[in-house]
Image (cartoon, rainbow, N blue to C red; front, side, top):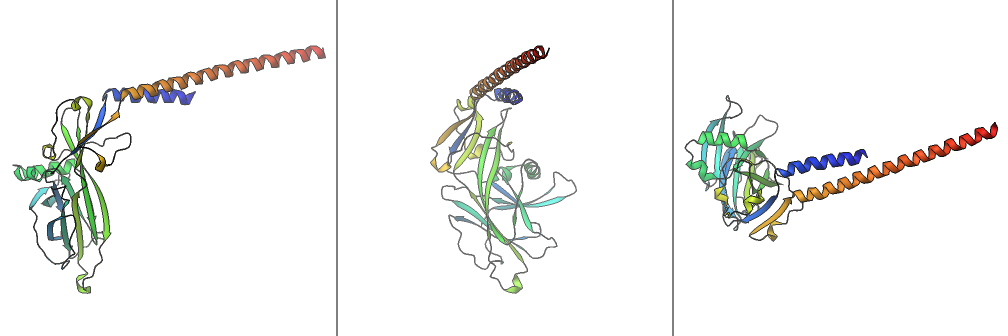
Length: 314
């Protein structure tokens, strides 16, 4: 009985919450080109040795640990930490890959000569448009707002970290669109074949690549009825979306068409669950009623037999 009551209460609470968002859907939009993302790296004392754009594969390393070609568009900027006004941060902004269909990737190599820390790593964060950073009249404010709204990640020395990025766009209640970066990372150990004298310097390797050409967009059903030509360029630069809970299995992106919609939260499903909960509550009440009747019947039978035994003794 208590379980049935709790189930009804929980279902009604979920139903009231879903009434605020009657139908939510997830759609996948295919793009040929992404707007080049911005990759903000915080190397600290580490030195950038090389930065190159490659397609599909990375050629074998030549002279690892020594300065090479820097064929990437980069910008350096210093700004005050938005969480601590007394900390000055130095960021290296790198233009990310665009041509997802050609599997464009960016490969960077760093070297750290000396470190007093027990563990060494380089922080980085992602924002959706490198061009918006370049054209921003206040780059310091741009980076402070970006760091305040975005999560940062790390990659360690002695490994090659491969980062595969994807975009999730959501529409907030006030109508603003927000973008969130999601990433999958794989780490491979670097086999250091340098001379023993050079092994005191630690090397960092990192690769950035788009996972697939599909942007995941979460929106209300009312927005789906409006014509929408969404591209990766239209997304804001540094607003991060809250995590979205999607019900049901997500189809593999390689099997999706140009635009695929999935209904994820429908109040009619909740109504069906509510009916089931009330049915369970009714059955529990009926069972309790029959149990009480049975106990009364047993009690009357016991009292009758006790009265007959007393009369017999008398």
